Image 1 (cartoon, rainbow, N blue to C red):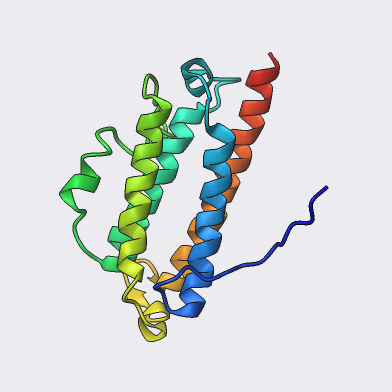
Image 2: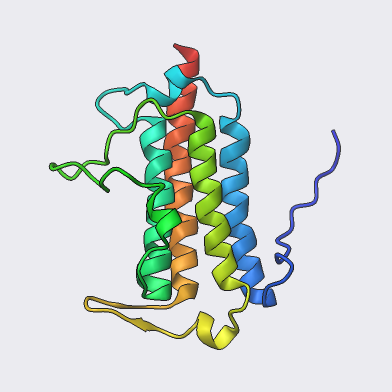
Length: 172
């Protein structure tokens, strides 16, 4: 077995510390994409025990990332191109995630990649002062640093759910 090197390496073109956090964010996504590559439409759309589908979770991951970027980090209206990637509401009337069905893996990957591309572009020119500068909102104050931490945690959590669903569905 070949020895692996397990290091966090800052993404180039970013302030070093910011680049390290963004590398972690990208690493979670990389493992998600690798594991899902080749997944069938049937598996993406199948519900088990009234849980969300894999497709619904992928839509949710991208939507939450975009929302944190525009609302918390930038404090601005959403870019029209990014908004167009989310024609469906955030959640159903009962508070559960919007059910997504019939969208191909390629559509999900495009949405995830486009949101991430825009997300990363906004951090390229950020310095450590802005990284740690609180955004003052009605119900809380938040820094871009915390947003990235939260998104790593959020996507990791849903990645675990997706991997669990994938194992169950592939074994049935």
